[in-house]
Length: 620
Image (cartoon, rainbow, N blue to C red):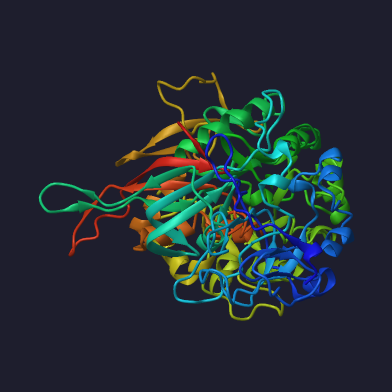
């Protein structure tokens, strides 16, 4: 090689603080197409940017200056200084490393994306990097090595070693959190002695953390906790955050109160965290169009992630397109059929029914995630089809408050419905000649392109008997979704900061009454009647009851409050699961029962001890 193309192999010096001038590396696997386009970088007892793939025969640091010219990089040191060139100024190059004579911790003849690494040439001209990924077994790993010209110290601009001024803003780095020795519910299964990694607001998998050489800013160890008598308490379970797809209000607040909807959303979103609920659908019962037009814009505005509080996924609208005979606690005067089909949907709910537009226009950000409709009503099939054709799976249609026959219910599925609202309640009952909507749970004769629906269950021990709940679970466990159907009457006690003089559900007044022979249960009824209005249950109570009623384990019960609703709402992968790319919303469940080799303890006894939302722990 021409000596004019050689550069010194003088080792890199250290700055005044004694730290090696090594830069953190980041990067992504490179393609061979990129290598062919930009040329290659070869290493042979040294390193260099070259326009060919043959390693230099000299032990010196070889520099092909034609490669620099390709990126308009000044080859003259003084010109570089005058123009303010730094490491970050050099464009990304893609290359291939030949490691035949380099440190054997590098894998041979693998393509890499070369970005953000400085080099040190040791006494034997070995290549060294910061946070090098190695594999002692010799397996191939894609690792980032180099993308910027990083000459020996005499060529480095002074700005590289000069500390930034106090007023100069530094780039922010997302916090890395590692949870060790965890029992984690992953994809519906309990994985013991696992590790959970969080970067910023997202879950990342262990392989990503390994290949990128990530170091955690915070480590939380959930090792076994020894207790007396030779018994041990089980590790806490790390589970996805709970999702409640039907909640009318809480802590005295009602989501159908158009005058106080903003305060209601704020208070309930913050208060639900202590119950492990990290996402929910505020539910609005049958109301006048004017109420929807006032409530839905506020829900649209507050929809999405909010720091330190449960995320609003969009409203669940029950009514006004429901059956008068199965109205439950809804105001009979406001109920009507969608006789004009889809046109009535748009007219009643207003412009905020439109899902998020492609340009993310706030005016088109839908406030609605679920609409409950009685399919037997005039125009209902057309309305369901219209919703599906216009918005696909962005808005879920649910069958509820209905006198539907089995055939009506099947037809609704064919039109686009995929869910059933609070199974057993406010619907035609199961009959041996016409099972009604309940019959969908075991249906084998559904129309092509349809599937069994997800169904909500209020497992408070009041709305449905344990035996009925068990039958539903055994019939269709994959569609079993826990909901609280909680009201403003929920979460209120003597120490509650907010206690309204009157509890409401939309335009109806409601009252809490005790349940005979069950001191732990509470009924909420329309004032002056025996009509059930909703529940005062919490999601952990519903999970515990499911374990007791259905004879299932804690993992299956948690899935009914996490993975199942996420799939029903078409947000699975972002919510309801702890996998790479999912939102870092999760809860820590302390199991109350002790366990040994012969006894796993009572899994219905647990409490929510810690909650993370968007990667940050929320204290309550």
